[in-house]
Amino acid sequence: MPYGGFWWRVLAYILDAIILQIATSIIGGIFGVGLALPLTGLGAGENAAFGMMMFGMIGASLVINWLYFAIMESSKLQATVGKLAVGVVVTDLRGERLTFARATGRYFAKILSSLILCIGYIMVAFTERKQGLHDIVASTLVYKTRDPSVLFDNREVFA
Image (cartoon, rainbow, N blue to C red; front, side, top):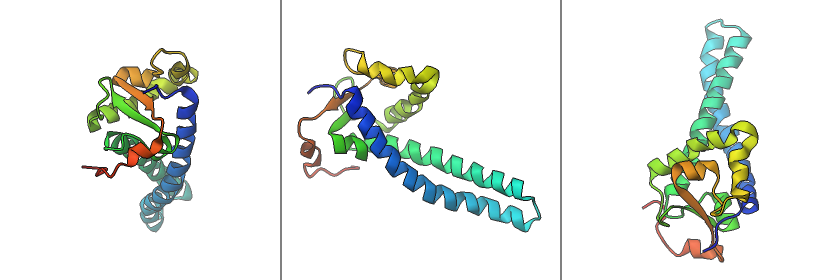
């Protein structure tokens, strides 16, 4: 199987970002308001309530993003919704499904890829196996499937 190249991965990330923005706006908003409301009842100022609401929204966003990527990439699908849409899957270096721990490591290694002008992501365009810094750190590969429908061969997704 060929490796998943830079532009396929960018497109997959854009699709995932749209999905995650909707989910985190709703869930983070509910969580943030839930944290802020008690402060207003206690006579805290608007700034304190707003700060607590933002804290809740950001915290919820971080957890939702981590769980989305780690659970989806370690599932039998081996891909997020965006990756499925463009037909790429994530594996370990032997082509095996990721463990939840490795998928978690890959997610948090993306912080390194983001540092210094996102060079860790741009590496995908120039490395032999199309690996970003986060892929190298987590010992993962991304493959392009010829036919995305092979990803839906009646397997139990989270088994």
